[in-house]
Length: 142
Image (cartoon, rainbow, N blue to C red; front, side, top):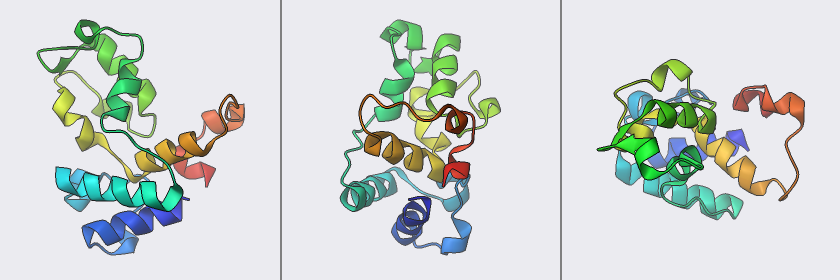
């Protein structure tokens, strides 16, 4: 799965496949823009038969927090940051820090973010991931 996602991202962004690794940050390392995310999501959805709704990471991060508990004037609260760290385990927790705005969440996306999202959707409902896999980085699961 990871190899196919890497291939999709390399093709969509016109970059060398060798430059696309699980930990690669799409915006910082590959110069992806918002429009590129739409193309990547479309290609991934088509390839894997899944649906990745716009704002999925934000919805998962928000969890049971109210809008005001999650972010104030677009700026993530401490509780919002903590929830986002849980929602995006593939991102170094040090990158999810005070001063992060809702609009900046996309700047955290890694190749592994897309892999995790697809893996979660393909996993049969009601079946938890093996406990050993929960503790491993997404890239190690492949």
